[in-house]
Amino acid sequence: MPSLDSLEESLLSYYRACELCPRRCGVDRTENQVGFCGEGARLRIATIEAHLGEEPPISGKNGSGTVFFSGCSLRCLFCQNYQISQEALGRQWTLQELADRLALLHEHEGIHNVNLVTPDHFLPHTVALVRLLRDRGIPIPTVYNLSGYQRVESLRLIESVADIYLPDFKYADPTLAHSLSQAANYATVALEALCEMVRQKGFLDTFVGNHDHEIAAISAEDLSSPSRQGVLVRHLILPGYIQNSLQVLSILFVEFGGDLPISLMSQYAPVRQFPLGSPLSRQVTRNEFQEVFQHAQELGFRNLFVQFPEEAAMDRRPFVPDFHLVNPFPGNIRTGT
Ligand code: SF4
View 1: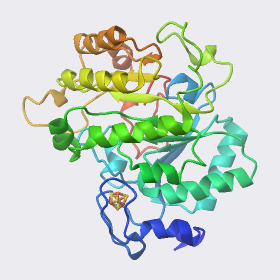
View 2: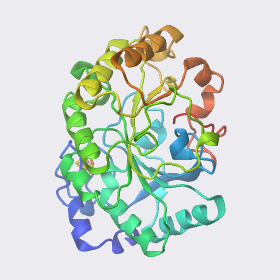
View 3: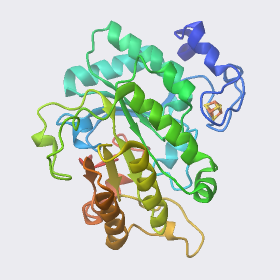
View 4: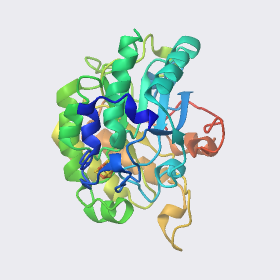
């Protein structure tokens, strides 16, 4: 089992009676048992690339070194990356292979960070990976790109290796969270997790102390240096569920105030057949987006990245990646993932 050999025992133990995420399945993944995430204890990855599709301070000019792990502990019905979250696309990698690949991307592409996409079920591997990279003198930040559905205990496991948290905050509505992600307690769990992330790292350093910029005015070209630390929250607006989005923003404002950095995304595209009449069969309308954006402004959020629907619609396909391709994001464009 090459990908397990290099994991020290203290990290390997997290895979026995696994409780890494709020599902707390209790299965022994070192004995090939799998829980809700569908993954054993061998590291599996779908794609690694220098990605330009994140927010400007994450992608910068050269791209973010994204690692898309196979499997997912949330498995949303509408997941834009469903091929890896639900169809288990990917192959086994050793930690050494992964570190080598990221070192190459750093050397040749100049990636600004290592971006671990929904790594919850492989957190012990990510701790070992970051230690390996640091031992090799690679000085770039580590981004934990998360679903928002994390246990505080697991966030403490990665506190010393995480630099930037990029969590979603998907749902305020428990019924919606249950029907789309089998996680009725999502809002409670995500709020607790976000408090812990902010306690550890503060708000994204791009915005700290900067209250004068215009909304969405920051571009990659304007940035002299990409972010190195802090929290940026993402919210994907779902068509037909605008009340959920409004509630999400209200909850976040009450808890964290107007300086919390937020990325409002309108890039949703249907990736599967939904029942006839489901709003998830279409894209977000301009009016729906405008209602959410206006609410964010009225509440007083100041640090916003905004992806207008027409901007997303101009190049819709690249937002729905095809992980069967060598380059899953053919456009590799610069706003949101
Ligand atoms: S990481 Fe996977 S096995 Fe572990 S608790 Fe979460 S869903 Fe279950």
